[in-house]
Image (cartoon, rainbow, N blue to C red; front, side, top):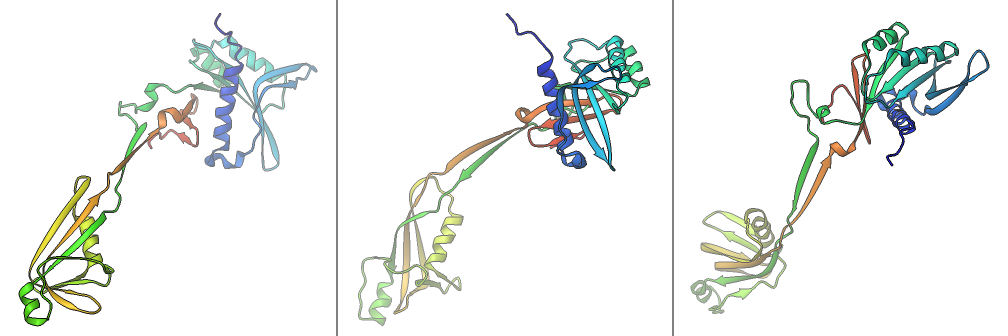
Length: 292
């Protein structure tokens, strides 16, 4: 059997949304108000009269009492329901403000009677697809998908240098016919290119490689030849013919994050007499302007 609609679930829903509005930054003066459901008040005849929602707030030392009557209807509220609320509040003079909340709407007679008796009419409901677009049909942003790519530093496997053998024979007692590997500290080894008029540490070259070389994942090698260049270390300087750098490009990691505003939109409160609309989200309130 379908569950009987007692109205209590809707009363709690309205109370939660109204409490969220009262606790919002714009209405900070009304923070920490206790919004009560199914509150009983004594009327002038000594009878307990129950109101679906009730709260008090104080301004300049004066306490104001507000009630809301709730009807979870699938059709427009009739004038008789407004009359019933008027009868209840007339018997309790200390009530300062009365509101009526429903999910669907109000008959014309109910609207006129409520306006004449200073009762605000609300439509309080779950969100609908139409809430996500302007009156002109322009959609609001309700989902953001963030794709984040994580790129990891290059892994230098080996750096080898080939010295100019003729220069070495002429200027040193060393004959070099095979390249040798870098065993020193990359910040203490410099490559001076006299054609380009530049001098860079091996660390600088590694960093440029990381920034400029966009490679697929895996192992790669670059080779740089020189017309007139020297390799300098703390103890020596030699003419350089070329160098090669063997390096690995790690696999990138991808993370996808979805910000779904549709799921965080809890409900909507429409004030018919004031032409205002509140969108109640899990962590914020939007009044009229629903853009993100």
